[in-house]
Amino acid sequence: MNKSSHSFGDGTLHDSINSNIAQSINGLDIHYLDSGEVDNKKPLILLLHGFPELAYSWRKIIVPLSQSGYRVIAPDQRGFGRTTGWDNSYTDDLSTYSHINLVRDMVALVYSLGYDSVECVIGHDSGAGVAGWASIIRPDIFKSVILMSAPFAGPPSIPFDTNNNPIGQIHGRPDNISEELASLKRPRKHYQHYYRTPEANKDMTECSQGVHSFLRGYYHYKSADWQGNKPFQLESWTAGELEKMPTYYIMDLEDNMAQTVEKEMPTQSQIDSCKWLTETELSVYAKEYSRTGFQGGLNWYRRGGNVASAPGSQQALEVFSGKKIDIPSLFIAGKQDWGPQQRPGALSNLQNKVCSNMKSMHFIDKAGHWVQQEQPEEVCKLVIEFLKTI
Image (cartoon, rainbow, N blue to C red; front, side, top):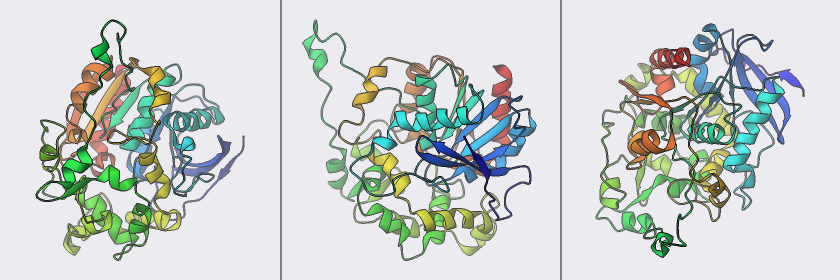
């Protein structure tokens, strides 16, 4: 297994963070950021980003965690950034983006670095899904897990006791949420449904405002900087409840995502005063997504999700039905983040059904969806305290 240095060259990374490529990892050459001793004497922490982010989104917590006695790595996952070898087309074959294969990517990366265990896997947003599945599939490798911003739903269920109770075969009514949202007085649509459409990638990569401004608007709109982010618990999975969320989740029916965020752009003064994401830092994201497009990340939504999975995408996961995350777990999110509330009952399900060893759940004030970037000091504090307890 070869590893080669890969300079970032933008001046925004701490000097102790290295940028490398691990070659021939499950069909990929995986780019990752690395900090800490590389002689395998220190326990390993694996950081998994979400969408539309990169390994770079962990830049503010990599060094503090490594200084606490760990080797810390953050890869660009399949479909993102400087990792290569993934299919960036709107393809019908989404098997390489399956949950199990994404976990395989990370197990192979860990092994390539000479480790057979990970002290803690930390996943944010869609990266929390990979962290959750890694915890269920290989608890012998992943010793603890921290889920950030997105409550992991756990394995899909298989109907139980149907031989003695035929009514148990009934799963419930079909999910007609798309039709219900479109029928509202103010017609709407779910962002995940939009992200699965063929036009979503082009809408964002070729948007009128440009990728840099689009991402500025997107990150601002979902952060604590946008004053409208005051999440609360929704009562049910109904159009009438879902429409209470901001339009970055429940979009106006005729708008694409670029048009959605353009209506909520920050002022120049707000941009200038944004310390958690400077224009120089934003340029890193903009350059990468201008080069790769968004389709790789969008394929994650197409191969499955909580709203409307691709046909058959959940079937392979049913073998894990009833299995819980038994390793020590922690949940962290921003207090101004709608992510934990976007699926009614998800937080309760995570704490009471999905995880058997959930230590605690934390909601950090003055942080929206990008919690590890908006409030990195508080995130680091919580992570280090959690690791000390295990």
